[in-house]
Amino acid sequence: EIVLTQSPGTLSLSPGERVTLSCRASQSVNNNYLAWYQQKPGQAPRLLIHDAFSRATGIPDRFSGSGSGTDFSLTISRLEPGDFAVYYCQQYGSSVYTFGQGTKLEIK
Amino acid sequence: QVQLQESGPGLVKPSETLSLTCGVSGYSISSGYWWGWVRQPPGEGLEWIATIHHTGSTYYNPSLKSRVTISVDTSNNQFSLNLTSVTAADTAVFYCARHDGSGYYFDYWGQGTLVTVSS
Image (cartoon, rainbow over all chains, first blue to last red; front, side, top):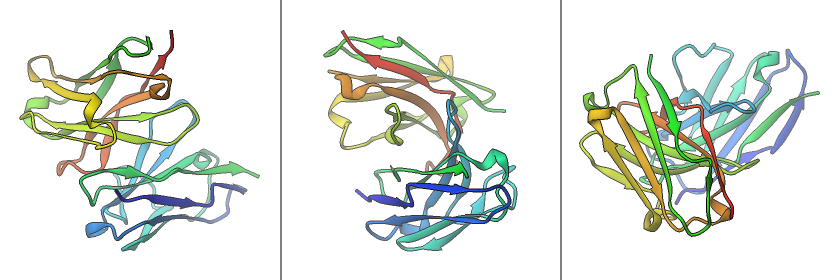
């Protein structure tokens, strides 16, 4: 099973700032099959990025994904108030799908 | 627009079986795609449980496989989850979701339903 470790656990930032979240895999993710989700309190996760860097339908270009192998990142170029949430990465390169433990973005 | 809605008891007793159903609207399950279940204990992260294709092909998280059954009912456009011998550690919000066309990431999610295991 591939273990995904996200860092940092919590980030305190202000609207307008740029942020990069990290997701590191315990072994290489086949075909860079990695997705990012955003989850707000009381809501289901929302798909942001798939295949490491492809934005999902309707996701603004402020969100971008990068990385390959074992190291992946999600960058939000200019934080808006609605971006403060928990972000999860998920790998689907192996037959056992796993998620990271999440990074919480909070308003400073 | 694809919509998914979980339904089932919100309270299950320890050692009993947790049964949930996911009703799908806006898309016919028999037309394709893979469909899955994900759970999230209160205040914790996400855990994939199981996935099924409309043809009935399945795959499971090995950590839960001995207790989980996923099934599909194309006539009622829904799929279901059974989790046996539950304990308090199974208390979670359970989400049903649709995989993308290749059966990988999740592109549509239900709103989730909290299931508490307690006597």
